[in-house]
Image (cartoon, rainbow, N blue to C red; front, side):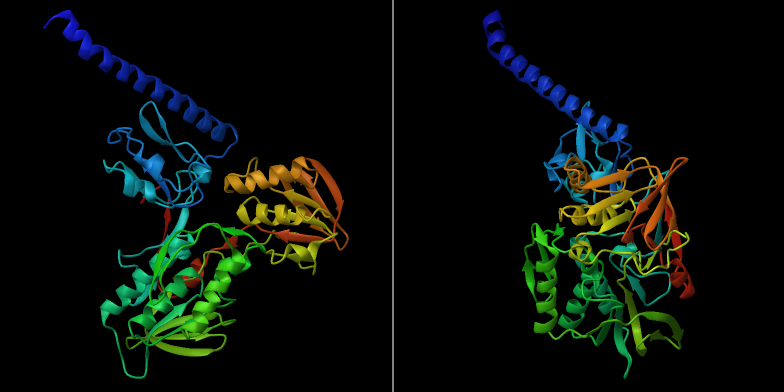
Length: 435
């Protein structure tokens, strides 16, 4: 082979190789910088389901990066030195598309981390708990995304239908919760001809109903029983709730609101479910409830005052007020930003941590923009110590501030219903970064 022939083949190959290496280097630099920013800001703990990458299996094809629905708005996954890395942990909200896209089976979806455990009911692959006949779907089982909850509600009901549990004069299934998972389960039960009843302790939509007015709800296309394929993109809370309300009315779904479950007992193969509205008997029970039914309190003096609430329903009610929001998660940041954006309020956001690790990037950005406009004051490493009718005492380190105040919104999360689950015999385990 002469030199000319070698040059004809070798030079283009060399150019391609050099171009590839330069491109990979630029990607590594960009994604390493994004990862360093996350670490320096203390944003290293994923809020929910997230990927763990096996570097020995990953070949750096980038399929997971491209598949992530949060990209390109947020850099969740990146490539560093030819390997996939979770570069923006707090921006990951558990879509799970990365695992499906990976052609080398290098990704495992897990809950919790070594530093922060998450309590999850022990479930079989068909969503049945260790108590035969009691199933769990949606947020309580670790799936907080609306699309995932809708899908799980259907899948759990399909599993319930396959059990064939039936008894004359008894409901085939009682659905507890009318959020996304409960709604999908009710549609599925009706489509399969099962006798069912759904009960909801609050209003249609569950946690979605509690979002601030106009809050952007990020969902994706999903197939619903009876309804068919539904496409949602950048949908407001109001639009989504209207769709659900129309769905319930047009399909005559059996849902009772303002009815909370107090106890579940199994007697001779039938579940006796006592609620604040009466008692039901069912062959199976589907728990489609949230993880934060009971708000977590601060345990400080004055917390019982009328001006203290634990969720934001409508920012308008705080127009012209001096408001303190307590918490560092998405609910707290959304509440603080929504009220601050009214323009004629004075809002203080108090959080005991050093950074908003559990909040999504878009919410952190809203807070920062409100701060830049002078509409919002953020007090990190701070704690509310005393609430008085007209003031609130906040400590930041050893320094105390006595702030004039009209309203306090505590968004410090909620108490997991572990006691309730254990009372009916369901085992709960703490996940520390395990599947």
